[in-house]
Amino acid sequence: MPSDDERVRDDFTPNHESKIPEQEEAHSEPHSIYTPAEKWFIVALIGFGGLFSPLSSNIYFPVIPTLSQVFHKSIELINLTVTMYIVFQGLAPMFWGTLADSFGRRLMFICCLLLLSASCIGLALVPSNAYWLLLLLRCLQSAGSASTIALGAGVIGDISSPAERGGFFGVYNIGPLVGPAIGPVLGGALADHLGWRSIFWFLCIASAGCALTLILFLPETLRSLVGNGSIPPPTISRPVLPLVGRRATKITSTSPVPRTRKPFQNPLRLLFNPDILILLSFNGLVCAVFYAVNASIATIFHETYPELSQTQLGLCYLAIGGGMLVGSATSGKLLNWDYQRVRRSILAESEKTTAQDESKFPIEKARLRLIPILLTCFVASCAAYGWCIKERVSIAGPLVFLVAVGLFTMSIMNAAQTLILDLVPSQGSSVTACNNLVRCALSATAVAVIQPILSALGAGWTYVLLVGMCVVASPLIYVVIRIGPGCREKRRRRSEAAQVQEGN
Image (cartoon, rainbow, N blue to C red; front, top):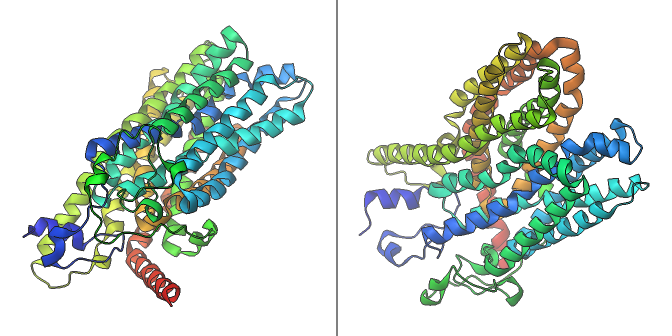
């Protein structure tokens, strides 16, 4: 007989899977056939792939002045290549993510990396008199690299249960967050020693190597194709060297999932769910403030500390990048710990009531209840950073607060993004693509207006203004906690009605 703790874990599962009677629970299939070590191996693989979206963006920044001279264009026109990159960074995952939810994660992941590698070859060879080609290839580069984060999130949704998802998501984000930390430093070093074209050759070789790694080792995880991993996928979706999932051959599926391909669904329809839209908007606003801080670091530090060299300016990015890495790694464990606390409190309440309905589990509360504390720390860190710059204190001051900004940004975003994945786990890549679209739209706006605001208000009041918007938006968290269970119930009923209709 399963323990009370085990029954609660199954009874309060936000994935809306049908519950199994207590007497049959011992014969139920696991959520995933992969062992914990195999899951971590898969997370490491997709984290490697997710590195290339921010790396391709940030490694480009140090060579913008050089490209202005080489292509005989103004800084504004070269910056247009950055703007277009951000635009496609928001749009491309809507396409690739939805394809991945229909045709499989593995194939789309590899295609994205191969497109990135091919576009980098073109960028490394682009003639200096073909500015239009530079702009076009940057769009293709973004289309290839930007979707890897959404695809990786879909994989995590496939292989993990809600109780462990926060930890996986936190460690997975380390890969994508290494890019902002090392990108500017790496780009400056390559350009100084090997020329600006070397950054694209580096990206070409690295992304091709990653694609080869995934071809060799990454299994297909899309549940509509492989179930919990025990159903063999089509040949094209099988790794060349299947190091993980070997126990699949030892598991006999009691209720095999038919290998049916989902129809292509418009991911924008997810935005019609009020809880998802509100959560994406709040998460996008925090991300926009972070991007405004990150994009202005070089300019602000150059004006405030003119003695810094270009290499030293690039090294300043390590502060916020290091904070992001620490925040991503620690927040995952914090999310899992708080999830278990809420689950235990529900167990205590269930002893007083017979209501054991999976839709009643407050997954929104379990993921979001720490955000007010984290947001307070984030607001204080951003404001303190701005006033340190304004007062021209020792450079150690703003660098310390940049570490805090990165740490609390990732703690907030990990909590929100984990919940986003919990709400629609079967459309993990699509909902992450929607998240990316909202984030990029708000972040592009923030980056476009940050310099005029800094010129008008100064660093101190600029960052007070930006974080003030986050404070004003903070009640949205409580709105999601309040309306979330009802919205999930409506989605569950629509899904059941659609399944019945398909059966008829």
